[in-house]
Length: 479
Image (cartoon, rainbow, N blue to C red):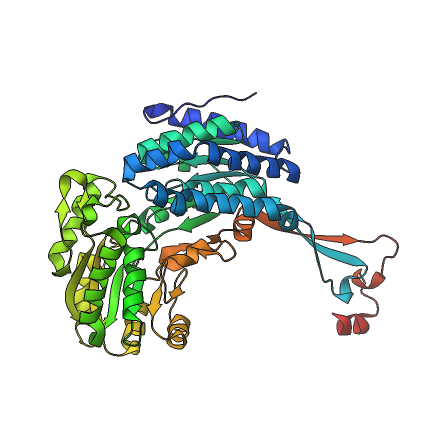
């Protein structure tokens, strides 16, 4: 029997009791074996597919209310990605879940070896506010595909979206299979005190550490999709007009509130002025003469985010943009000249003194530093935490070379953002920007345990492995 679990945003000390009920019901449901059948999983994926169509308008309307995200941007950056992921899993789940035969050495004759993918079990998926539909439901696709149950925790900073998601999930799935809980960080803390078989968290590195610490008490595996300061390099041989357009798009998408947005610009000294002009033209091409009036330009999520990002404008000279409107939480895309050259011996000290160059911006402010040699860029980037994304504009050969000498969760050469759009390659971080990747088959694997199984025939029983180890000289040569 399905039990409805109400929103938990204001229940104070009742958190743990309610969570005990939800988690235990999901644990019992998983142990029943209900999720093991591949046809069941495919059916559940199809139910999610149908729900995404049914709830498309309420979801996109909610994204407009909470983030001023247009229908087109909401569909392209949120719903279409989840729909594509669901369709991909429906097509391939049988193949991914199939028992895989593996080679067996002669020393193990007459055995055969296999890898069996089994669901990890009861999972917790915690999502941020910036892409609240995609970053909650995309991991859910992997959980369903692998045969897990899931507790979903959306962000309280987008209350309209989170409420719609709760209604959609309750309308689509039984709560002992998939349930939504709402609330603030106190709810997060109460949730994390419980034992799960996997925690999938998307958010900031600081909160990621909190999640990992809580998970360690139960030896729970974690997938952490975090963030960081993703560099964008423009070399002197780059197509400046095209680079400016693709960077302007990547930086203004969701008003810079994207974990893989270009965070800061490292530009060759010789093309700096040309880029500034090209960037200004690109913004107008993308958003019209007055970006504030453009329906496709998102606002800061709340007043706190607005004030934080606005504060960065005082940390350099504004070369383009700079307008703000607190009432609308509007910040114009802004190129900020930090007057730091990587050729200077004190470049690190100057950079470390600026919040705009040490903290993840998560907004449309774009600080610029200059360089003269690519070796300066490699050195600067590798002295910092590994970012979630890395962008290079210039010759592809140089791009591959600098990718080889740096590290990041993902990268694009002569583009931004687009590596997240391909479900055939993993998306994830490394080091401070996260651990584990997902999308496509990687999502199936993330929520699965790859179990090794050896099946040994009974028609013969070779004596060599048994004490007292007769014919050891021959056995030694075989093994």
